[in-house]
Length: 355
Image 1 (cartoon, rainbow, N blue to C red):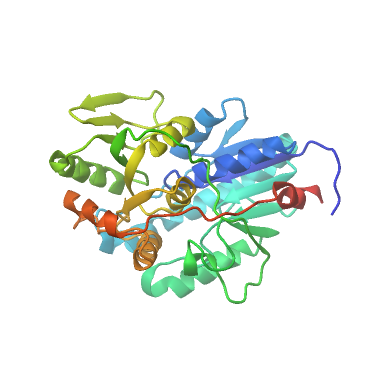
Image 2: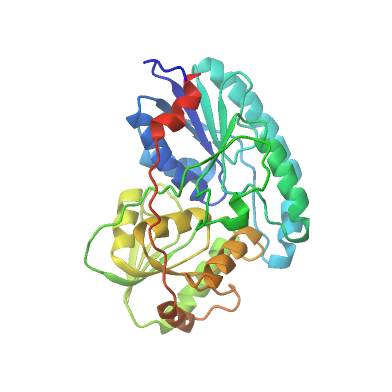
């Protein structure tokens, strides 16, 4: 390993598919700063907006959008994604060209791509971040996984935010029997920290993910919550220029929260109702929270994770169309998510950029 004192510039580029890819990059960006690296942020849409709010003094660049949308019906999920594939491929080619220009313009020394397929270079160390070594797509899982692994192989390393051995969080998603590329397991990473604080809310609802499913769930939950007896905080997961707050009876609505505010609210909440997105799961593990999951219809990854954690008696779940507010009573019969201790050596991890 070659180490010197040069202050290297690292491009950090999360995918804009929900906010999970962006939020799990937050602790990585902070660690880069702590270890004498200069991060540059690159993304699009809500993910870029969120990171610009978190790091207003870091240079932020805009990448082309993949235009990812969910179908209104779960059975149409793969068809909708297939229809979007020409736009995704076009965006990947455009971001490849942009990255090539940016490397020279901003003297970039390394790349961290969180599932952005065109953010890489043969000239500088490029690392891929994903918890999906296998990509769940139903009866086409084998094909989608092989295609994804072929892309990952182009990078010098693949960082997986999970444990290598059991117990782990993502199961088959994040583990391969005979990988043909270099994998480093980071353990769960989260921007959140557990605090000892008084409980202020009986229920915290936090939404995320692309439309229209985010909005459909929001409409459903607002109706269901009319039957809930308790104090609720409801975060819609819409990143806008200004934060909005509205109080209606015993429910307080926010459009979005900053990381610090969100961390405080998590700690002040008894129970969390949310999607079974992997970044959310890592946050809940760090906070040791009890939760109830409603996986996004048609998204096989979230369904797999919800089923896995339900079988392990950790977190119950329900299909979106079946959910009733009374289902929350099931949580008491489950163990909840507990912190799994891991120590990450950031200096050793970042040594890939010192070569």
